[in-house]
Image 1 (cartoon, rainbow, N blue to C red):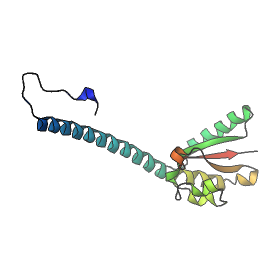
Image 2 (spheres, one colour; image 1 turned 90 degrees about the horizontal axis):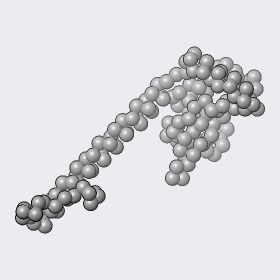
Image 3 (tube, rainbow, N blue to C red; image 1 turned 90 degrees about the vertical axis):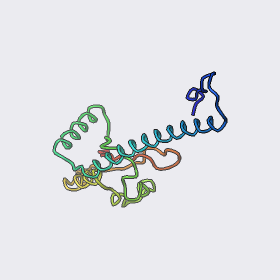
Image 4 (cartoon, rainbow, N blue to C red; image 1 turned 60 degrees about the horizontal axis):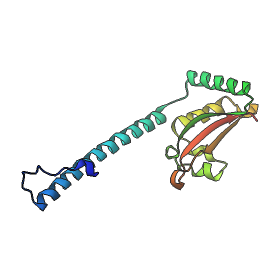
Length: 154
């Protein structure tokens, strides 16, 4: 609570210390309710994003977009593109396999990330020299944060 949020009663009013404490308690309660509502709204947004990620499957439009991304990267002289990034919490192990460089990191994929990997395998891109890679992109507060999935043609 900032000092700007609290005002004393008018000069003509008599008030007690108990009344002031009650007024402060009411203001703190209102601020707590507001913060809780904002947190619920944020949680709902995160839940919606998670649900959408889990339900999403790779479409023909996605494939066309990734193909354009590869073509653009080749014109720029690059050898890989980032397909997607997402929170490590979306993985079954919260990114530990990827972070530790485990050879079986793909088993932790879920949702759209799993769909991407299955498509990579289905079209046998690995047999044609492409690599499907995953990296931890950041460590907020020391924890595994976002994961990036890449296709490489090095």
